[in-house]
Amino acid sequence: MRSPRILEVWRLGTVNYLKFLKIQDKLVSERKAHQIPDTLLSLEHPPTYTLGKRRTDHNLLIPQSQLTKIGAELHYTQRGGDITFHGPHQAILYPIISLRSIGFGARNYVETLERSMIEFASMYGVKARPGNKCETGVWVGDRKIGAIGVRISSGITCHGLAFNIDPDLNYFEHIVPCGIADKEVTSLRRETDALLPSEEVIHKQLITCLAKAFSYDDVLWKEDPSVILDTQR
Amino acid sequence: MALRLMLASSRIASHLRISVSHRAFSSVVLKDLKYADSHEWVKIEGNKATVGITDHAQEHLGDVVYVKLPDVGRSVSQGESFGAVESVKATSDINSPISGKVLQVNKDLSESPALVNSSPYEEGWIMKVELSDAGEVKKLMDSDKYSKFCEEEDSKH
Image 1 (cartoon, rainbow over the protein chains, first blue to last red):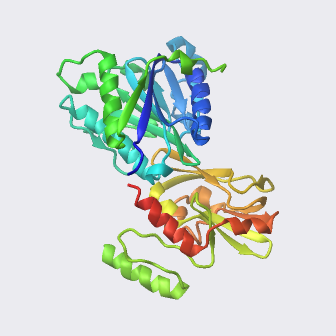
Image 2 (cartoon, helix red, strand yellow):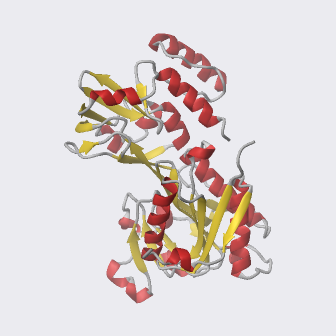
Image 3 (cartoon, one colour):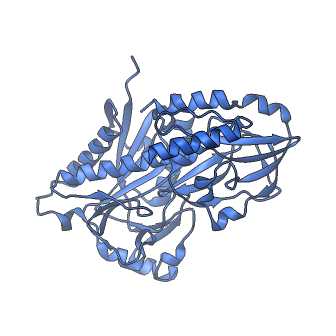
């Protein structure tokens, strides 16, 4: 009988992007060294634009000098994908998991992330679909509701997905989101008439959908985020 | 579609002397190469080696849209990352199966990254390396071992 697959989940509230990168680096090293099990970070960022490894900064439509005026930061990352926006009321999940133990490649991994978000959206009666070729992500019609950008190193994942609950969509006007012009960005708030519960409940639902999609036997909810937020350790 | 691929791969198989099992979605493995468990292949010719990623790897990546090539002249170490490929919004590190110095990189991949998908063992080669330790090749898998390794990995889900 195989040993049960456990996912450890840390819910961290709002975390500045640079701080998150430090936490992520530490956890990825620990996961590679088998010091921690598969781990998931659930959090939000203050208004932040991020770029992927290809550094497609031509898709930022305002000069970088204007970013502080709109209260946003810009960060370059090693993840796949194009430019995107993160901000309050957008649920972000960062799985730091071993793909080798489930025999997954990048494609299976990303498709399962898409399925997690689609399943979650369906809880609110929203019929979402995976993106077409070259349009990885989750869509409602021609409107993008969930974005994905990940990095896989020695079979360990980092970065992850962002699902729009009710972010300020105006921030997306300053970029060509994910490098795809002429397509709208949307949110759960826009797509459903259902009453939305608290964001804590919503995040837990999204996490549960992901855990189910990846066939975890158990989810361990870690209660003390200060353990992970203190990166001096 | 699957039948056409099976027949095509059998013809290619007998031409190239490779083993192809006709399970659905089994990937191509070439007999004269060595393989790392991170799905890179290496062709050794004297003290020079050509490196790329396997058919199994490209299938599991999806359509490659970008290849980050190493700089010519840099050193690479067995088991360590030397570059990356991007597909389906995922950047996947690629690890070197051998140690040495990068002599040449496949510049065609900058214009046509999809060569990694369409021709992983031929036109999709990634770098040529001057070996620093020929003994390291012993740590790699031959084609039979690698085929079994792929089957075991695929059966995990």
